[in-house]
Image (cartoon, rainbow, N blue to C red):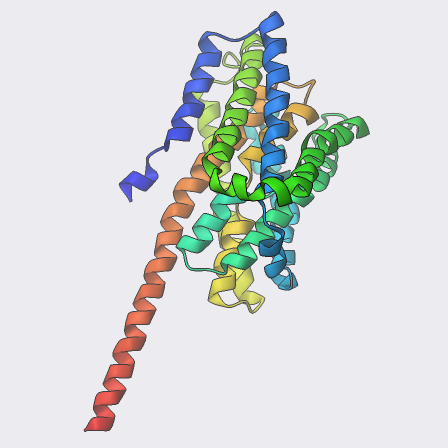
Length: 339
């Protein structure tokens, strides 16, 4: 459990990237070159995800529409409502810029890889998790920009330009669709080289983080973000995750879902995607201090991984205990019948 709670290599790389941007921020021509490289890496990332995602695996769980609607409602309705309703209580803990990042976090789609991994670890409905997480990620390309527009207007951050929505579609959806089209030719190769997708995935995020924090550091990010504010942000992320886990768990039971479906709803409905969120932030918040926007996502990402790792093991342990008790009961009944 201690090993699960410690930061993984990617989290250490994120922290190192933030430190590098704080000490050696890129500027001028170098910043422009990094910006172009980041755009190319993001487009390649979504192309490879499109080529990797099997249409058959998605269609296998698509008939479970009640579960998918529940996950989508948690991701795109419950989270935004929590961010808005809890704003009077939570926003004094951080700066207005950071709470705008919190609201953006609430609009993001669910993760794909970690949602499926934790559902599998907890012995939930894996095929439904593949479908639910994939649908959330794809629909988020359209829903997240619209929700951001509503959030920004309510937060006093101005209105969202439709050009930003078009740029999101062009930069993320078009490469994804191109990857789906090319899947028949390169899908097998991509599946055999999943490490390549992981490198592009993590590399694109690190590039965006470096350029975002470089610009924010030059604008005085750390001068306006003291340690008490970072502590307040940690509290906000913990509160949002705890509420999401509780509401998805007991809400799925109230709706009559079985244990396997409950596990899927909990792990797909409580997650927020770092891989989708950072590229979207780069487009949607071009005129804002981007470091403050992505900082809540990075912190929430690490908290959700640590907490869900522990929760998945608890679900699996309960399943083992229930199976052992069932075997013991059957043995007792057999002995009673023999007597």
